[in-house]
Structure formats: structure tokens, C-alpha cells
Image (cartoon, rainbow, N blue to C red; front, side, top):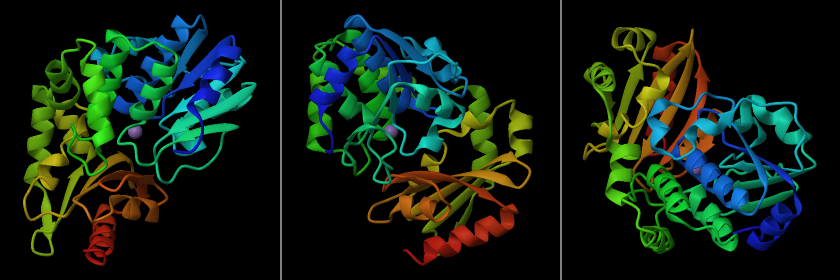
Amino acid sequence: MTGNVGEIVKLALKAQTIALYAHTNPDGDTLGSTLALALALEKAGKKVSLFCDTPIPQKFDCLYGWDKFELPSKVVHDLAISVDCSSLDRLGQCVKSYLSARKQVAIDHHASFQRFADVCLVDSEASACAEIVFLVVKELKALSKETAELLFGAIVTDSGCFAFSSVSAKTHNIAAELMSYGIDASDIIYKVFRSTDKRQFALKIRALAKAKFFEDDKIAVMVFDKSDFEATGTEIDRTEGIINELINIDTVKVAFALSEVGPHHYKLSVRSKSPFNAAEIASYYGGGGHVNAAGCRVNGYVEDIIENIVRLAKDRL
Ligand SMILES: [Mn+2]
């Protein structure tokens, strides 16, 4: 861990107005962590604002306070804290608002973290940013059923429900402490990790039916294109988790999901089994992430992109 929990808490207690930032295309980790931190800071008497440049997907309505996020504003805050952002561009359109604050703090757990803030609290060994935020919330004496639920949901999201190699004894100790606040862990896991609907089911069937396998089924690739989204009435955020069906296949070492976000423009998600490093592939394209889960954007014709990622993966098998 680099940085000091006490220093962050001291800074926060000195500030009157605090802006918290989740990353663009938010996931359960950035949202749960940000919301738990917001509750803790509000309890300490601070005026807290929550920002995200993307509308929060409905599936996160189980996270208490999920509807409190706003689009970036011109209000200048005493303190800005980014949560789960490895670089400034993860803030999307919120960058200006973040930089306009009197002081910047970053809390993150990516190995690729770029030191863009005045004060950084980073632990690249944490399975979720929520493991770090847990320490801050605890220091603020704000652990409660509500903050525990949010932090638990965040950890479940980023740890693949405690399955990724990033999960440590510390992760489980934190989860155990959170459970001691009387949260319904099983219900949270169902809501943030398992729950789906018929539309997503239809999207899954279409994409899985087209999945391709390479190198004796060690590499798997699936594509979500515009027609898949149109036919199923879904949007890109509903692709979340479907890639796990591929990486769960016994022979598959690395799985890719390409989601069309515009003409010849794709979001690439990478999942891997250790020791295959998913982040290496994502960083080749300027993205980043973790050993078992990473992502980036790629431009080009889908056939060319597939050829390229299969080659990159083959070299690393
Ligand atoms: Mn995270």
C-alpha cells in the first residue's frame, strides 16, 4: 500500500465540501466504494457530492444511494476524491470538475495507476478498491449495515465473487468483518453478481452461439455487434459478465469479448486464468486492468481485431 489512510481522513475532515468521483462506465466496485465513502463523510458532517459521467445502469439500484450521482458541474469543491480510477481519463467528462477542486485525492487498486493526484492511496494487491475504502470508512468510524452492504457488493463485483487470483486472506477477513454488520451476503451476491433478465439472456444466447475458439480451444472470442443489441433491446452495459461463460470452459486460458460501441469501434474485455496476464493484452491497446480481468478500446474491422488479439494471446500462452 502506498499512501496513508490517516492522511486522507485528516484531509477529508479539514474540508467542508467534498466531491467523490466514480469512473466512466461504472462497475459495482467504483459505485459501492464511492457510495460507502459518501455515507462515511456525510456522517462526519461533510457536504458530499457524487459524480459520474455515465448514467448509472439500473442493475445497480440495489446499491443504496445509486441515484445520487450527478453529471459533472462547475461547482468548485474543497476536496475531490477519485475512486477506482487508474488514470485521469477514467474520469471521462468529470476531469475538469475533479481538477477544479482545491485539492485532489486518488484511491485506487490498479497496478497501472498513474499518480495524477496530490495525495494517492493505492494498493495494487487489493482485489477491489473497496478493500482500501473499507480502511478509510473504518478510520472514520462509519462502518454500519449500509456501508458494509455497499463495500461487500463492491468486493463481490471486482473479485469475481471471491474467485479471482487477486483475492487474499485479507479480502476474506474484510468480507467477514462486513458480514458481522448483519448484511444479507447471499442476497447481495445474487443482486450484483448473478441476477439477469430475459433480454440479457437473449443477448447471451446470440453472442455465445457465435463464439469462436482458437489454439485447441485455449483462446475464446465472442462479439456483441449492433444487431445483437438491436434484436434484444439491450445496450452495451448488459454484456457484463457474459464473458465468464467462455473463461469458465475448462480448456480456455484467455477469453475476449468485443462489443461494438460505434462504427469500427469496439470495447474489448479480456478475462484470463492465471498465469495468463489479461492486463498485458489490454495495455497493448492502451487500456489496463488486473491479471485476470482487463479492458480497452480498439478501432478497426472486427475480423482484423480478432486476428490481432488471437496472435497476441497465442504469443503469451
Ligand atoms: Mn475496481
